[in-house]
Image (tube, rainbow, N blue to C red; front, side, top):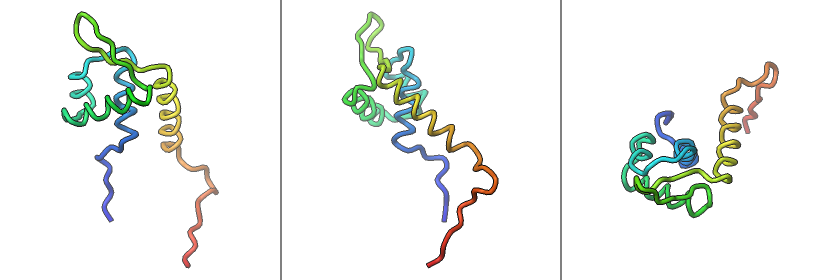
Length: 100
């Protein structure tokens, strides 16, 4: 069995994009900093906007994407899950697998 440690999942990419957009960022910068293709960045931006996690604002410099309050809430819980998964299991609580 091979592990896929280098590939990010959908939720992780959403977290990355929302984290980048907390102070406002343009689409091209999201694409390069989150290491996404042009098609991927469009897909994720559309989904995040549709879910109310991201908002797009027109400025003099162009379109800027910002994380909404709901998006910040997502980031809070996402970071809690990541933190939880990185913690080692307490001693003595190893899971015993039952072979059937």
